[in-house]
Image 1 (cartoon, helix red, strand yellow):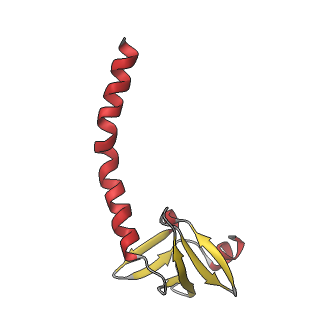
Image 2 (spheres, one colour; image 1 turned 60 degrees about the vertical axis):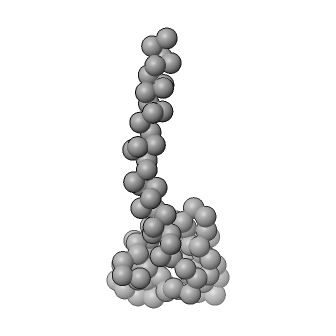
Image 3 (tube, one colour; image 1 turned 180 degrees about the vertical axis):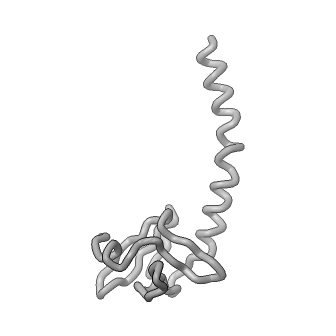
Length: 94
């Protein structure tokens, strides 16, 4: 009986804890759109966004091929898209 109560309590508070994070992720995804340039931490151009995926990751055209940059490695500030990945790290992505 105690296990059911603990599970019910955990489920009751999960949406409240996840809500703001999901809202922030959705807001960031709205700022990502095809055609935007993605830059590395040194502000060097990596490529243009070809597609924004449902999970928030983006597919860019990098050195004449497609690579996918995970959502958690992207930052959008004032319409500028930057990744925390270096050029060498992006080159290793598929």
